[in-house]
Image 1 (cartoon, rainbow, N blue to C red):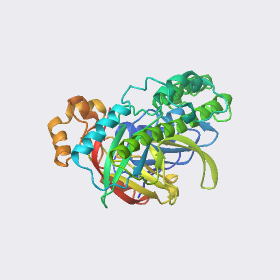
Image 2: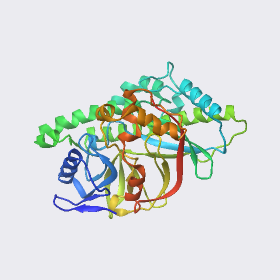
Image 3: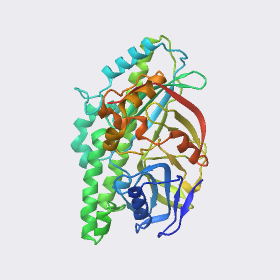
Image 4: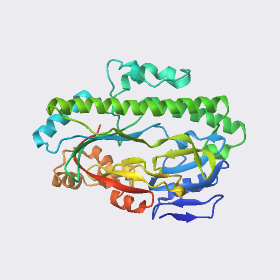
Length: 386
């Protein structure tokens, strides 16, 4: 259930028990942002980001904020059930090795352009999309780095699942950075220097620049989905080649960095979800844990107070540098080995993605029991990270 703060220009509703000082400062900034509408919603995985906390949901009228969408536009998670109940450790390792060979990780991309038919359609190829088109074609079907992952999981009934987390690669970052620079320029020209300092530069939605950003942002959202779909198809083929006649369930997808026109409290508004996902009533979603912990398939409860949203994962409790400095490598490896998980932690530099750097996913789920209901729990068997 939410906690309510009423000391700012508009109410803030938080689904968490504590929040770091930097993130709280950003919460207050967006609650006092001149175009914020009705209220601000902060999810239980929230932590400090650029301008707006990751795990934040913000509605506006007439303006759009690039930093309230984020740099990895369209980033999200997809999952698919296999009709497979048993996989030996040798077969699991062989499958993971084949995935690593087929899907470029980190900064790597394909040497050749992927099929142009997989690219989303854009009425006018302008700005960053046009400039990054060739690079985007080679990046289609690649994982990226950071917290992006590919996992093999098992549900409580013993079925094997495939899950992956990835976004729009460098294309989304180029679009985000380009339009944020334009937004900063326009804000300075119009006397909003304080918002530039708060990293909350905005664009008028109906201006030429605002329309272009919205169009390219939506393209990145669709591109990120195409990226995940292509990787999932290639992972499924690897499994199908290993297990003859294998069938798969429905493809489930949910994005968590975007802005969209939606109706809430009787008004059409622009909802910015940054590290948060839709949780409309009955909508199926995915909330992954950290490396080595459970992930969840959920069904939205349509809670109006959160703009029908929920968390996008466990959420960081340590910055990357802090995690590599302070976490114990042997302890983090032992946690994963004790569960028999084929994992990606080898050296201290991998500790930025260890479970100790993240919040307790079970606590995160308890805090949002009025936002989603759990449909399926998924335990990790093997994970790939860059």
